[in-house]
Image 1 (cartoon, helix red, strand yellow):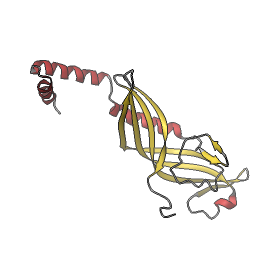
Image 2 (cartoon, one colour; image 1 turned 45 degrees about the vertical axis):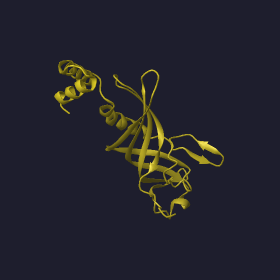
Image 3 (cartoon, one colour; image 1 turned 180 degrees about the vertical axis):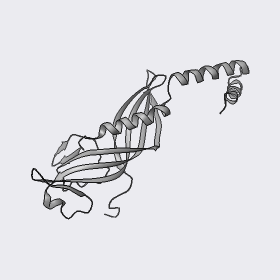
Image 4 (tube, rainbow, N blue to C red; image 1 turned 30 degrees about the vertical axis):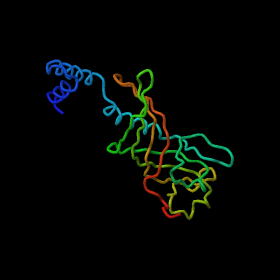
Length: 188
């Protein structure tokens, strides 16, 4: 919307003269150029978040214990044969960024949920006999200290809770998990 159109709408809405509305619109645009919007900050921040995920362990249950790591519980992973899983590469599709404002905090910060589709490559280690006949993993090395090293890919949706401070380029990301976009075994 043009500056002129914004000023006309604002003048009508607030019942103020057009010149005052135009002054306010100009001031708002100046502030926006000084302080980036959430939309302008998200692509770079998401790229950085995905880059920092590489090398992280994947959380999973082993018996009654929960191993620490990033949560991929809603993604079908071959945890039945792999003892350890790490994220090898996380490539976001920035064109799929979607966000929703949740609640404003008393200090003016905004809580936002953010999601993006991504291609994720995992690396895992398991018994050689367990991975030998699997078609959902690719063998990288058949003997790494007695375990087979494998890799596999998934298309996922990554989710974060973000605190955004309007007027400052401050974003605080907390990973909220991932879900599978393309089921590996849809009828299993």
